[in-house]
Image 1 (cartoon, rainbow, N blue to C red):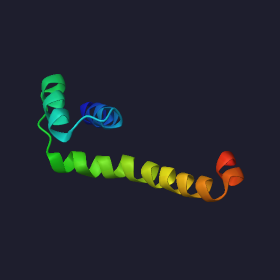
Image 2 (image 1 turned 135 degrees about the horizontal axis):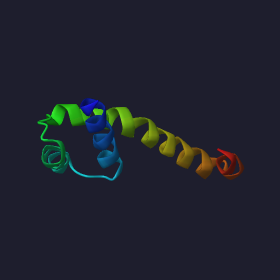
Image 3 (image 1 turned 90 degrees about the vertical axis):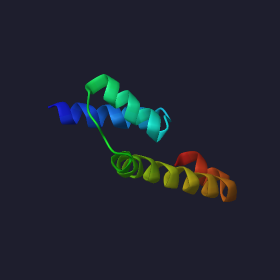
Image 4 (image 1 turned 180 degrees about the vertical axis):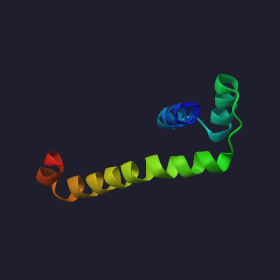
Length: 72
């Protein structure tokens, strides 16, 4: 139960663009849990990469084909 709350709050903080060290300190003060920066990196790659790839693809396609980009 507590682990899922911690992971959800880490994902929320990642989406709010906090740095890794800030996330470590916030989680410690909020839940008294020690987490490693490697855990944050893995969660950040799980969350951020697909969205950034999707945005890059959208920007490329909308630049080359404005009508297609509008409907993606």
